[in-house]
Length: 442
Image (cartoon, rainbow, N blue to C red; front, side, top):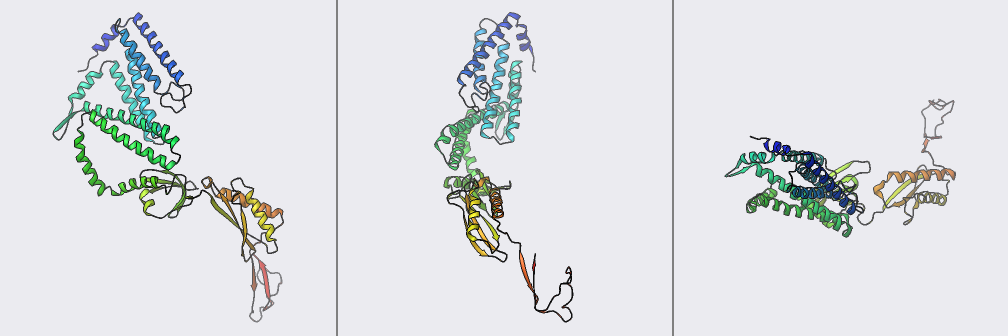
């Protein structure tokens, strides 16, 4: 049964003089930790895990405060009992654990909705363990957990061993993710300019470090790693049968990133869906259309199916506008107006320059096709096409060039006897003569 005798005894040993000495020592430790963190964090970026945005909201401040406070506690124990410094040590230790997990997870998984839940869970566990250690109840709780055993076949494992194993694995995995994130930021980002190659390199480094870290964590808690060979064989059989589609998508993801047939930022067309690749995951690829719709395409479909890469060799994209003018218009003047209207837009490239051709003798007028190029299709196509069309319309109106309405000629070959002088609906005494022509505009 849990008792409070140890905690009550420590409280009884606290006097005003010793308490003020502990307060002074704690304040001195905090000032020293803040000064060191402030000094070394002056020129550090705001996303640094060690320093954070304000120098003291990273990992270095609670780590230094923990080290200085524990050193002061050990020194004061030689001359007087300590309580406040003991509480401070547990608080700084819990704060260090929470910041380690929270900041690493936010950096590695910035868009994950599960990160906040994990942070809250870790916070509750850390603060709960700190409170139990402060009041002296942590050793009895651990003893109770050690007495509860669970059977796995012929092996029996205590809850304490399971808890410590999960904690050890979590710490090792967090440190592994931290190292992989640092390698990606410090080494891969400056050295590898291609985004796709950087993605596959970071994924490979992260997967390798996680595997090594997991093996170290399992070995630390006493798991026999030779037993994993059976698990590896079973996993291989499962991948060969039930998980072959999932494995094919993962392998296809690495093939796409290594071959660079499609890259992040390319404009592609898969079946009838056209858009820009925003991310290439290990299992699927995200394609975002210009209207905001986003498609999740399995990587195997991209490898085995037909995919049109609209920007494989060059990011330049051709756009065109078709317009009809009256037959009495000057073709050279119309071509000049069309080319000047396109060239006046900022996003339209000067090389190759816009060109306009007389492409068809239409039923209502001369049809011209204006061709121009842009180099940033990811910013939208309809917006630049609209700007060019408005400029074309303004230019034609200023030049007095007519944009004809559709016109049709109706020829009446013959009329039945007695209908030649009838007034048609909507007509005011207009006679229709057999064999005559009537021209109307629609």
